[in-house]
Length: 274
Image 1: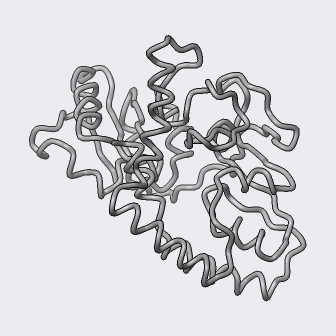
Image 2: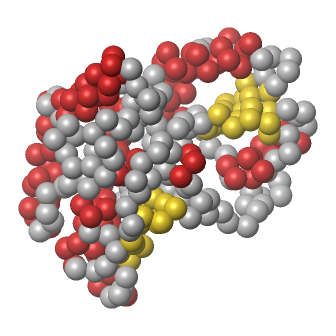
């Protein structure tokens, strides 16, 4: 369910087309010799390929996420038995887990047979034809890149042979602090002794069961740790009623600077996705 929600949240052809046209105007004005494109900005890769502009692909997470195919028929830079991203499976799998890994690929493919997703595919095909963009291919963004710069290290990923064009550069961080001096969240952190910070990014979508489990984790640690949870507003309806939330849990739809939160001396644990 969570993986399906991520796909539906991020696959919006009309929005991608609007961003493509806006970026196209900038490219026409600047006429860049090289583009640096984030891996989730598919419109940027499409434009670079359409114009024949060399590009560097920026990857803000582990390399296997963009080097592993979700499609059972797709090419992949990782072995066929490699755990599919978002599957939650370990590197060393039992026979049952290997079967689940294969099934996960088929279920991902099957998502696009749903009427809603099929309609999006037709919309995407029509937009690409109008703009003169080639059909999408998950590995094209890596195959055609002049270089791939990944803000991670090998030790955070499962072991596999990393292609020569991929450079692991570790975390790329701006100078801190970023948050304003009068930030209310920072003042709250200052007043705590030990805080567990939970944040799952802007794309990950949790299920109701997962949200309930995380609330229960906070409840069981009441009296020893405070919890700060950055949960997007559109997912907060999955929380229990306000009166039933544990007193040690603070939910925010947005924080001024996640890096400032992580750098705060009172934050003991960071709970995120893999």
